[in-house]
Image (tube, rainbow, N blue to C red):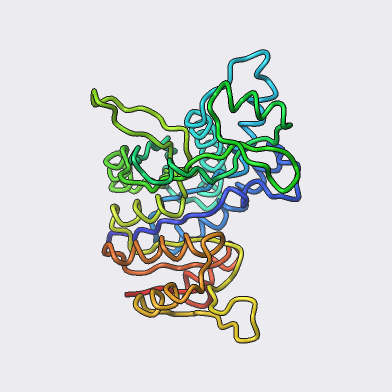
Length: 314
C-alpha cells in the first residue's frame, strides 16, 4: 500500500535560535531535534518532503562575506542562498539518516539544491523591502549603494542594511527530480529557504537573481505539484487564532477554506506574521490539496493524530 505524502515546512529559526550564538554544534543539535520529529511522522506511515527556512543562516553567510571581502571576493545573494541551502540540507540529512537508522527504518534521504523561477517583472523588484545581512555604518552603506547599486535602509537605529526583493515563486525548476525521488519513497529535503531565485534570460539560459523567496509560498506550490495528502506549516503558536491578542481571541481547531478566506479578508492575519502562512495554506487547498495543519514543532505529532493544531480543509 502506498504511503500518504506529507510536505512539512519550518523556519530557519528552528535550527538557529535568536538567543544562541548560532554555532555549528548548536545547529546540529536542533537538526537532531527536528529529525526526531520528522522520523516520527514517517513512522506513522507518511512519505516526507521537508522545506526549511534559512533567514538567519543566509544572513550569517552574508556577514561572513562582508567580513572577508578585503581578502576573498564575495558571492552574490543567490549563491549565498544556495550555500545556506546546501549546508542546512547536509546537517538535516545527516540527522535524518541517524534517526532512521536508530528506528531501523529503511528509508533513504536526499538533499536537493532547488532553483525556483521568478518573474523579473514582479512588482517586488520595484520596491525591495526585505532587510538582509549585516548592519553597515552610514559611510559603508553609501559606498555599497554607489558601488553595487544596493538599496539601503536605516534599521531601527542599529545601522543601515541592504533591502532586497521577495518575488512570488512561479515554477520549481527541479520539480521532476523531486517527483522522481518521492516516487521512489525517498525522504527529500528541497526548496530550502524558498529555493534559489532564478529566471530565463533572452537566450533561454538560467540566471540567478539577487532576491529571496518566502519558503511558505514555495512549499505550498511544491506540495500542490506533488499532490501531497498533507501540508504542514510549523510556526511558533499551537493554533491559528482570530482576534489575536484581544479578549475575544479564538483558536481555530478545524476551519473550512471559505471561512478562513473570510477571516483573511477581515484582516485577522497580518502580512508580517501569520499572513503568508494563511495565503500558502489557501493556495494549497485551492490547487487541489486536501488538508493543511498549522502548529508548533512540539505539537506536531499530536496535530498529525488530530489532537492539536489548526486543520484547514476544503
